[in-house]
Length: 327
Ligand SMILES: Cc1cc2nc3c(=O)[nH]c(=O)nc-3n(C[C@H](O)[C@H](O)[C@H](O)COP(=O)(O)OP(=O)(O)OC[C@H]3O[C@@H](n4cnc5c(N)ncnc54)[C@H](O)[C@@H]3O)c2cc1C
Image 1: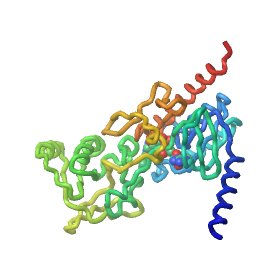
Image 2: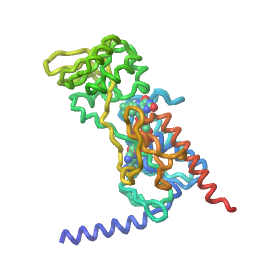
Image 3: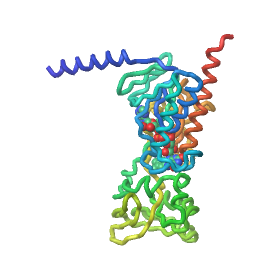
């Protein structure tokens, strides 16, 4: 009986998907700064575009976004709302709160299946970003302070944390290395390796020379008040007062495996990040598949993501102009 009900429901879902399969010139998967910026320029180029977005931008956990000219200090959700509102002006852009579930190559382009239907397109822009998995660091209390007083990026939040008592959290290699950068913003920096023993005596000496203490004891918990870090408590019950800090590693991973499934070649970028190899048009070696923003490079920042979105949209417009030009 239930078997037949399942078959019946599946057939309805398939029929619904068939009806809802729409052709677009461009499908943008991901509506963070990169994807929304691409949509804006494609809208202005009057190109038939859909943006699929689950509305969970990487920095949405953060209280303020910094370093993007004219939007410095705004909440990430405010920047997103402005972007969404501004896109409404462009009739060729459809914004959908919809999740892309799969991306398949077809004879003449791509098939994108979503939780609400499907799309076909000759071109797809992947702007799905990265996500941070700080819970994997196993530090109790870290998720309460992440994005509020403990951050991943000094260029994003270093100014607000300047001259405070800071901690740099990470392993025995990444945390000491990262502390060199953080020490530019504050002269009171301590390195916490959470039990990972620092064996490089030269490194310890070097950090000491720059006034940075390494504490390699296991952390019991972080104590905070309303997201503001107050104390780092160790398993031996010793306590260190801190006002904030930075993470040398956020255990980040790609939001989706769409690029990976096409075996797109990668290269090593800053801090050992794996970066997808693209040409000057941000196009991969799969014709019609473009990658921008964090999805391409693991970490770009808001301004850079916006720039990549604008750039890819202009390049695609040029390609479409060439294709449609009769000669
Ligand atoms: C705590 C924190 C603070 C930060 N602060 C700053 C800052 O102050 N300044 C700065 O420049 N940078 C900051 N960053 C970095 C910044 O958030 C990213 O570099 C930037 O958001 C990258 O933009 P993006 O569009 O590539 O990806 P994202 O902003 O991550 O956007 C990706 C979008 O794709 C959507 N998506 C994912 N999968 C799917 C799917 N299957 N279907 C549909 N949609 C999907 C997501 O919901 C999301 O909306 C911060 C990051 C963190 C973690």
